[in-house]
Length: 190
Image (tube, rainbow, N blue to C red; front, top):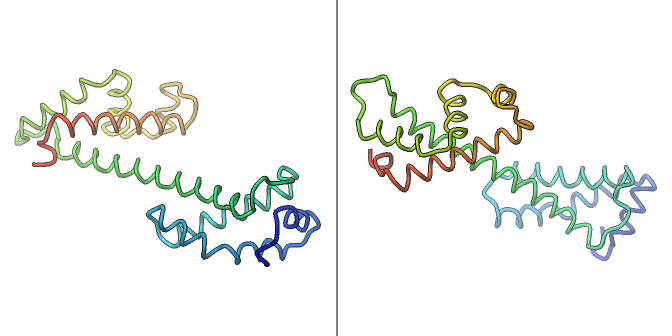
């Protein structure tokens, strides 16, 4: 594909059924996208490949469904923006999982039933949980002590959807983590 191909030409060719255009577009910008993405995100080559493929598929579908008839920028810019959003969402999910893992480690280190627990750690967790809103505290208990799933929590709390439920839990975990981090150094030292 020549570098002077413009968005209108590419869109018109796709609308005319020229599938070679999408293959050329995919191959032409692929390695540049990988380099660009690797400077902005932590991830594997497979993560970047998935994001790039999602971008190409989204572009193809938008054009074929008649939703994308013209662009104010280059096709490459549109594709990078879609890939960027995919990688950004993946990074957010990874951060949520890391928060969850760190909090889980702290919570698992303190099994309230055992007599040999460090009283400072038990008190730290108790104080941290008590400092939170009732909703956050109860959501965290439901998720991590009662092992309820996202859908079960969503239904029990009449939350809008699974994404809202996950986001609420992530915010609560973040608050708990920050409180523990700021107030109680026993988790990092013990």
